[in-house]
Length: 330
Ligand SMILES: Cc1cc2nc3c(=O)[nH]c(=O)nc-3n(C[C@H](O)[C@H](O)[C@H](O)COP(=O)(O)OP(=O)(O)OC[C@H]3O[C@@H](n4cnc5c(N)ncnc54)[C@H](O)[C@@H]3O)c2cc1C
Image (cartoon, rainbow, N blue to C red):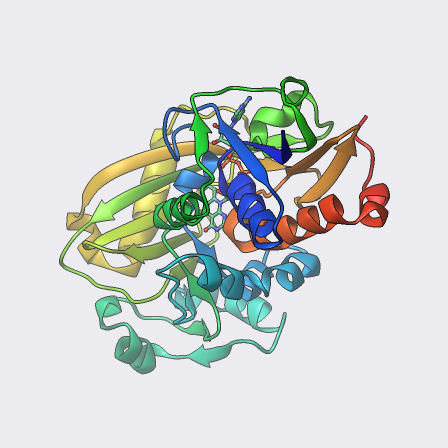
Protein backbone atom coordinates (compact mmCIF):
# COMPACT_ATOMS: atom_id res chain seq x y z
CA UNK A 1 0.00 0.00 0.00
CA UNK A 2 1.46 3.41 -0.95
CA UNK A 3 1.10 6.23 1.44
CA UNK A 4 -0.55 8.50 -1.14
CA UNK A 5 -2.34 7.50 -4.37
CA UNK A 6 -2.77 10.23 -6.96
CA UNK A 7 -5.48 10.12 -9.63
CA UNK A 8 -4.67 12.11 -12.79
CA UNK A 9 -1.36 12.90 -14.46
CA UNK A 10 -2.12 16.45 -15.55
CA UNK A 11 -0.21 19.36 -14.09
CA UNK A 12 -2.07 19.11 -10.75
CA UNK A 13 -1.31 15.41 -10.29
CA UNK A 14 2.31 15.59 -11.40
CA UNK A 15 3.23 18.67 -9.35
CA UNK A 16 1.67 17.01 -6.28
CA UNK A 17 3.56 13.79 -7.04
CA UNK A 18 6.93 15.57 -7.23
CA UNK A 19 6.27 17.69 -4.16
CA UNK A 20 5.34 14.63 -2.08
CA UNK A 21 8.35 12.66 -3.33
CA UNK A 22 10.63 15.60 -2.48
CA UNK A 23 9.34 15.27 1.09
CA UNK A 24 10.00 11.54 1.22
CA UNK A 25 6.37 10.38 0.91
CA UNK A 26 5.71 7.13 -1.03
CA UNK A 27 3.27 7.63 -3.91
CA UNK A 28 1.53 5.84 -6.75
CA UNK A 29 -0.10 7.62 -9.67
CA UNK A 30 -2.96 6.52 -11.94
CA UNK A 31 -3.92 8.01 -15.31
CA UNK A 32 -6.85 6.94 -17.43
CA UNK A 33 -5.24 7.89 -20.75
CA UNK A 34 -2.84 5.61 -22.59
CA UNK A 35 -0.06 8.19 -22.63
CA UNK A 36 1.01 11.48 -21.12
CA UNK A 37 -1.08 14.47 -22.15
CA UNK A 38 -3.86 12.55 -23.88
CA UNK A 39 -7.20 13.75 -22.49
CA UNK A 40 -5.51 16.29 -20.26
CA UNK A 41 -6.23 20.01 -20.33
CA UNK A 42 -2.61 20.61 -19.33
CA UNK A 43 -1.44 19.53 -22.81
CA UNK A 44 -3.05 22.63 -24.36
CA UNK A 45 -1.67 25.26 -22.01
CA UNK A 46 0.52 28.13 -23.13
CA UNK A 47 2.96 27.68 -20.26
CA UNK A 48 3.20 31.32 -19.22
CA UNK A 49 4.41 31.84 -15.67
CA UNK A 50 3.13 35.38 -15.59
CA UNK A 51 1.81 36.32 -12.15
CA UNK A 52 1.91 40.07 -12.77
CA UNK A 53 0.27 40.02 -16.22
CA UNK A 54 -2.47 37.75 -14.87
CA UNK A 55 -3.30 40.45 -12.35
CA UNK A 56 -5.11 42.07 -15.28
CA UNK A 57 -8.02 39.65 -14.93
CA UNK A 58 -7.31 37.68 -11.75
CA UNK A 59 -7.45 38.29 -8.01
CA UNK A 60 -4.43 39.56 -6.06
CA UNK A 61 -4.20 36.08 -4.49
CA UNK A 62 -3.42 34.54 -7.89
CA UNK A 63 -0.46 36.85 -8.30
CA UNK A 64 0.83 36.18 -4.80
CA UNK A 65 0.53 32.40 -5.06
CA UNK A 66 2.10 32.43 -8.52
CA UNK A 67 5.29 34.18 -7.43
CA UNK A 68 7.00 30.92 -6.46
CA UNK A 69 6.14 29.14 -9.74
CA UNK A 70 9.28 29.93 -11.79
CA UNK A 71 11.58 28.77 -8.99
CA UNK A 72 9.62 25.55 -8.43
CA UNK A 73 9.68 24.71 -12.12
CA UNK A 74 13.39 25.51 -12.45
CA UNK A 75 14.07 22.99 -9.71
CA UNK A 76 12.10 20.20 -11.42
CA UNK A 77 12.32 20.67 -15.20
CA UNK A 78 14.60 22.02 -17.91
CA UNK A 79 13.64 24.75 -20.35
CA UNK A 80 12.25 27.47 -18.08
CA UNK A 81 12.98 30.75 -19.86
CA UNK A 82 12.99 33.92 -17.81
CA UNK A 83 13.02 36.78 -20.30
CA UNK A 84 9.87 38.49 -19.15
CA UNK A 85 6.57 39.08 -20.91
CA UNK A 86 5.66 41.79 -23.36
CA UNK A 87 2.13 43.20 -23.36
CA UNK A 88 1.15 45.29 -26.38
CA UNK A 89 -1.87 47.23 -27.55
CA UNK A 90 -2.82 49.15 -30.65
CA UNK A 91 -2.47 52.93 -30.12
CA UNK A 92 -6.27 53.23 -29.83
CA UNK A 93 -6.25 50.74 -26.92
CA UNK A 94 -3.54 52.49 -24.89
CA UNK A 95 -5.96 52.95 -22.00
CA UNK A 96 -6.01 49.14 -21.57
CA UNK A 97 -2.27 49.24 -20.93
CA UNK A 98 -2.64 52.21 -18.60
CA UNK A 99 -5.14 50.25 -16.54
CA UNK A 100 -2.75 47.27 -16.35
CA UNK A 101 0.24 49.45 -15.47
CA UNK A 102 -1.64 50.90 -12.49
CA UNK A 103 -2.03 47.42 -10.95
CA UNK A 104 1.60 47.14 -9.86
CA UNK A 105 5.16 48.34 -10.19
CA UNK A 106 6.54 45.20 -11.82
CA UNK A 107 6.38 46.56 -15.37
CA UNK A 108 7.69 49.49 -17.34
CA UNK A 109 6.49 51.31 -20.44
CA UNK A 110 8.21 50.43 -23.68
CA UNK A 111 7.70 52.23 -27.01
CA UNK A 112 8.15 51.05 -30.61
CA UNK A 113 11.94 51.55 -31.02
CA UNK A 114 12.73 49.53 -27.89
CA UNK A 115 10.10 46.89 -28.74
CA UNK A 116 11.94 46.41 -32.05
CA UNK A 117 15.27 46.23 -30.28
CA UNK A 118 14.20 43.40 -27.96
CA UNK A 119 11.85 41.64 -30.40
CA UNK A 120 12.93 42.46 -33.99
CA UNK A 121 10.24 40.03 -35.21
CA UNK A 122 7.61 42.61 -34.31
CA UNK A 123 8.77 45.06 -37.01
CA UNK A 124 5.22 45.42 -38.36
CA UNK A 125 3.77 46.40 -35.04
CA UNK A 126 3.35 49.98 -34.04
CA UNK A 127 2.00 50.72 -30.62
CA UNK A 128 2.95 51.07 -27.00
CA UNK A 129 3.69 48.22 -24.63
CA UNK A 130 4.54 47.13 -21.12
CA UNK A 131 7.49 44.92 -20.31
CA UNK A 132 7.26 42.65 -17.26
CA UNK A 133 10.94 41.68 -16.99
CA UNK A 134 10.72 39.07 -14.21
CA UNK A 135 8.17 36.72 -15.74
CA UNK A 136 8.97 33.34 -17.25
CA UNK A 137 7.57 30.68 -19.56
CA UNK A 138 8.02 27.00 -20.37
CA UNK A 139 6.75 24.47 -22.87
CA UNK A 140 4.02 22.59 -20.92
CA UNK A 141 4.41 19.37 -22.91
CA UNK A 142 8.15 19.20 -22.24
CA UNK A 143 7.57 20.19 -18.62
CA UNK A 144 5.02 17.38 -18.05
CA UNK A 145 7.45 14.91 -19.66
CA UNK A 146 10.29 16.20 -17.46
CA UNK A 147 8.11 15.72 -14.36
CA UNK A 148 7.30 12.17 -15.47
CA UNK A 149 11.05 11.54 -15.94
CA UNK A 150 11.75 13.06 -12.50
CA UNK A 151 9.31 10.52 -11.03
CA UNK A 152 10.75 7.66 -13.06
CA UNK A 153 14.26 8.39 -11.86
CA UNK A 154 12.88 7.93 -8.36
CA UNK A 155 11.27 4.66 -9.40
CA UNK A 156 7.69 5.93 -9.65
CA UNK A 157 5.96 5.00 -12.91
CA UNK A 158 2.66 6.49 -13.96
CA UNK A 159 0.10 3.67 -14.32
CA UNK A 160 -1.43 4.58 -17.68
CA UNK A 161 -4.73 3.22 -18.96
CA UNK A 162 -6.25 3.02 -15.48
CA UNK A 163 -9.47 4.94 -14.91
CA UNK A 164 -9.91 4.68 -11.16
CA UNK A 165 -12.09 6.13 -8.43
CA UNK A 166 -10.81 7.10 -4.98
CA UNK A 167 -12.70 4.21 -3.37
CA UNK A 168 -10.89 1.72 -5.65
CA UNK A 169 -7.51 2.57 -4.17
CA UNK A 170 -5.74 1.07 -1.21
CA UNK A 171 -3.83 4.08 0.12
CA UNK A 172 -3.72 6.04 3.33
CA UNK A 173 -4.55 9.24 1.43
CA UNK A 174 -5.87 9.75 -2.09
CA UNK A 175 -5.29 12.96 -4.05
CA UNK A 176 -8.02 13.40 -6.63
CA UNK A 177 -6.42 15.49 -9.42
CA UNK A 178 -8.84 14.73 -12.23
CA UNK A 179 -9.36 18.33 -13.36
CA UNK A 180 -12.77 18.93 -14.90
CA UNK A 181 -13.47 15.16 -14.79
CA UNK A 182 -14.21 15.62 -11.05
CA UNK A 183 -17.18 17.92 -11.71
CA UNK A 184 -19.63 15.19 -10.66
CA UNK A 185 -18.23 15.12 -7.11
CA UNK A 186 -17.06 18.70 -6.64
CA UNK A 187 -19.98 21.12 -6.25
CA UNK A 188 -19.47 24.33 -8.18
CA UNK A 189 -16.69 23.04 -10.43
CA UNK A 190 -17.41 24.33 -13.93
CA UNK A 191 -15.70 24.13 -17.30
CA UNK A 192 -14.22 27.10 -19.17
CA UNK A 193 -13.45 26.13 -22.71
CA UNK A 194 -10.18 27.22 -24.28
CA UNK A 195 -9.18 26.99 -27.94
CA UNK A 196 -5.58 27.26 -29.09
CA UNK A 197 -3.42 26.72 -32.14
CA UNK A 198 0.17 25.94 -32.89
CA UNK A 199 1.57 27.90 -35.81
CA UNK A 200 4.87 27.32 -37.54
CA UNK A 201 6.81 29.85 -39.57
CA UNK A 202 10.47 30.69 -40.11
CA UNK A 203 9.55 34.27 -41.03
CA UNK A 204 9.40 35.55 -37.46
CA UNK A 205 11.17 34.79 -34.23
CA UNK A 206 10.23 35.81 -30.71
CA UNK A 207 12.11 35.26 -27.48
CA UNK A 208 9.35 35.82 -24.92
CA UNK A 209 5.55 35.55 -24.68
CA UNK A 210 3.77 38.47 -26.29
CA UNK A 211 0.23 39.43 -25.33
CA UNK A 212 -2.00 41.70 -27.34
CA UNK A 213 -4.72 43.47 -25.38
CA UNK A 214 -7.63 43.76 -27.72
CA UNK A 215 -11.27 44.57 -26.96
CA UNK A 216 -12.68 41.64 -29.00
CA UNK A 217 -10.03 38.94 -28.89
CA UNK A 218 -7.03 39.44 -26.63
CA UNK A 219 -4.37 36.87 -27.49
CA UNK A 220 -0.98 35.67 -26.44
CA UNK A 221 1.74 34.07 -28.48
CA UNK A 222 4.28 31.87 -26.74
CA UNK A 223 7.43 30.95 -28.71
CA UNK A 224 8.42 27.28 -28.80
CA UNK A 225 11.27 25.36 -30.46
CA UNK A 226 11.37 24.58 -34.18
CA UNK A 227 9.87 27.92 -35.26
CA UNK A 228 6.61 27.06 -33.54
CA UNK A 229 4.30 29.42 -31.69
CA UNK A 230 1.43 28.64 -29.36
CA UNK A 231 -1.43 31.01 -30.12
CA UNK A 232 -4.09 31.23 -27.41
CA UNK A 233 -6.62 31.34 -26.16
CA UNK A 234 -10.37 31.74 -26.02
CA UNK A 235 -12.24 31.82 -22.69
CA UNK A 236 -15.74 30.46 -23.19
CA UNK A 237 -18.17 29.50 -20.42
CA UNK A 238 -18.81 25.97 -21.65
CA UNK A 239 -17.83 22.40 -20.80
CA UNK A 240 -17.86 21.32 -24.42
CA UNK A 241 -14.35 20.18 -25.34
CA UNK A 242 -14.50 19.08 -28.96
CA UNK A 243 -15.56 21.92 -31.23
CA UNK A 244 -13.29 24.76 -32.41
CA UNK A 245 -15.62 27.41 -33.83
CA UNK A 246 -14.97 29.36 -37.02
CA UNK A 247 -15.41 32.63 -35.12
CA UNK A 248 -12.81 31.70 -32.52
CA UNK A 249 -10.31 30.68 -35.17
CA UNK A 250 -10.87 33.86 -37.17
CA UNK A 251 -10.60 36.08 -34.08
CA UNK A 252 -7.40 34.42 -32.81
CA UNK A 253 -5.73 34.54 -36.23
CA UNK A 254 -6.88 38.10 -36.86
CA UNK A 255 -5.26 39.26 -33.63
CA UNK A 256 -2.08 37.30 -34.43
CA UNK A 257 -1.78 39.06 -37.76
CA UNK A 258 -2.16 42.42 -36.02
CA UNK A 259 1.05 41.57 -34.15
CA UNK A 260 2.92 40.49 -37.26
CA UNK A 261 1.75 39.98 -40.83
CA UNK A 262 4.23 37.07 -40.99
CA UNK A 263 1.71 34.99 -39.07
CA UNK A 264 -0.51 35.28 -42.14
CA UNK A 265 1.85 32.94 -44.00
CA UNK A 266 2.38 30.57 -41.08
CA UNK A 267 1.27 26.96 -41.22
CA UNK A 268 -1.40 25.89 -38.70
CA UNK A 269 0.11 22.65 -37.48
CA UNK A 270 -2.35 21.98 -34.67
CA UNK A 271 -5.61 23.28 -33.29
CA UNK A 272 -6.72 22.14 -29.85
CA UNK A 273 -9.63 22.55 -27.48
CA UNK A 274 -10.03 21.65 -23.83
CA UNK A 275 -11.88 22.63 -20.69
CA UNK A 276 -10.25 24.45 -17.79
CA UNK A 277 -11.55 23.35 -14.38
CA UNK A 278 -12.75 26.37 -12.40
CA UNK A 279 -14.61 27.22 -9.21
CA UNK A 280 -16.97 30.23 -9.04
CA UNK A 281 -14.21 32.67 -8.07
CA UNK A 282 -11.62 31.12 -10.43
CA UNK A 283 -9.32 30.44 -7.47
CA UNK A 284 -7.97 26.89 -7.07
CA UNK A 285 -8.40 25.13 -3.76
CA UNK A 286 -8.35 21.86 -1.88
CA UNK A 287 -11.36 20.04 -0.48
CA UNK A 288 -11.37 16.93 1.69
CA UNK A 289 -13.74 14.02 2.10
CA UNK A 290 -12.84 11.00 4.25
CA UNK A 291 -9.27 10.11 3.16
CA UNK A 292 -9.49 12.01 -0.15
CA UNK A 293 -8.09 15.47 -0.91
CA UNK A 294 -9.42 17.08 -4.09
CA UNK A 295 -6.83 19.30 -5.79
CA UNK A 296 -8.68 21.32 -8.37
CA UNK A 297 -9.93 24.58 -9.89
CA UNK A 298 -6.68 25.60 -11.58
CA UNK A 299 -8.67 27.49 -14.24
CA UNK A 300 -6.22 29.29 -16.56
CA UNK A 301 -3.36 28.99 -14.07
CA UNK A 302 -2.38 25.32 -14.06
CA UNK A 303 1.36 25.93 -14.52
CA UNK A 304 1.35 29.20 -12.62
CA UNK A 305 -0.47 27.93 -9.53
CA UNK A 306 0.12 24.15 -9.75
CA UNK A 307 3.28 24.40 -7.58
CA UNK A 308 1.59 26.47 -4.84
CA UNK A 309 -1.39 24.11 -4.73
CA UNK A 310 0.92 21.07 -4.65
CA UNK A 311 2.84 22.55 -1.71
CA UNK A 312 -0.46 23.14 0.10
CA UNK A 313 -1.62 19.58 -0.68
CA UNK A 314 1.67 18.09 0.58
CA UNK A 315 1.41 20.20 3.76
CA UNK A 316 -2.12 18.87 4.31
CA UNK A 317 -1.02 15.26 3.77
CA UNK A 318 1.80 15.60 6.27
CA UNK A 319 0.24 17.87 8.85
CA UNK A 320 -3.07 16.79 10.46
CA UNK A 321 -3.88 20.35 11.62
CA UNK A 322 -3.83 21.65 8.05
CA UNK A 323 -5.90 18.66 6.94
CA UNK A 324 -8.60 19.58 9.47
CA UNK A 325 -8.67 23.16 8.19
CA UNK A 326 -9.57 22.14 4.63
CA UNK A 327 -13.22 22.65 3.71
CA UNK A 328 -15.26 19.43 3.58
CA UNK A 329 -16.56 18.34 0.21
CA UNK A 330 -20.36 17.86 0.31
C1 LIG B 1 -6.01 26.77 -24.32
C2 LIG B 1 -5.51 26.78 -22.89
C3 LIG B 1 -4.41 27.57 -22.54
C4 LIG B 1 -3.91 27.59 -21.24
N1 LIG B 1 -2.79 28.33 -20.94
C5 LIG B 1 -2.26 28.29 -19.69
C6 LIG B 1 -1.04 29.00 -19.37
O1 LIG B 1 -0.43 29.64 -20.22
N2 LIG B 1 -0.55 28.93 -18.10
C7 LIG B 1 -1.19 28.21 -17.13
O2 LIG B 1 -0.70 28.20 -16.00
N3 LIG B 1 -2.34 27.51 -17.41
C8 LIG B 1 -2.89 27.55 -18.65
N4 LIG B 1 -4.05 26.87 -18.93
C9 LIG B 1 -4.77 26.19 -17.84
C10 LIG B 1 -4.23 24.83 -17.52
O3 LIG B 1 -4.07 24.08 -18.70
C11 LIG B 1 -5.19 24.12 -16.55
O4 LIG B 1 -5.36 24.93 -15.41
C12 LIG B 1 -4.61 22.78 -16.10
O5 LIG B 1 -4.30 22.02 -17.22
C13 LIG B 1 -5.54 21.99 -15.21
O6 LIG B 1 -4.78 20.87 -14.82
P1 LIG B 1 -5.39 19.62 -14.08
O7 LIG B 1 -4.23 18.72 -13.80
O8 LIG B 1 -6.27 20.04 -12.98
O9 LIG B 1 -6.35 18.91 -15.17
P2 LIG B 1 -5.94 18.04 -16.43
O10 LIG B 1 -4.73 18.57 -17.10
O11 LIG B 1 -7.16 17.89 -17.27
O12 LIG B 1 -5.53 16.64 -15.81
C14 LIG B 1 -6.49 15.74 -15.27
C15 LIG B 1 -6.01 14.33 -15.61
O13 LIG B 1 -6.83 13.39 -14.91
C16 LIG B 1 -7.04 12.27 -15.76
N5 LIG B 1 -8.22 11.55 -15.28
C17 LIG B 1 -9.51 11.96 -15.33
N6 LIG B 1 -10.31 11.02 -14.77
C18 LIG B 1 -9.51 10.00 -14.37
C19 LIG B 1 -9.74 8.74 -13.73
N7 LIG B 1 -10.97 8.35 -13.34
N8 LIG B 1 -8.67 7.95 -13.46
C20 LIG B 1 -7.42 8.32 -13.82
N9 LIG B 1 -7.15 9.50 -14.44
C21 LIG B 1 -8.17 10.32 -14.70
C22 LIG B 1 -7.22 12.91 -17.13
O14 LIG B 1 -7.02 11.97 -18.18
C23 LIG B 1 -6.14 14.00 -17.09
O15 LIG B 1 -4.90 13.53 -17.57
C24 LIG B 1 -4.56 26.81 -20.24
C25 LIG B 1 -5.65 26.02 -20.58
C26 LIG B 1 -6.13 25.98 -21.90
C27 LIG B 1 -7.29 25.07 -22.27
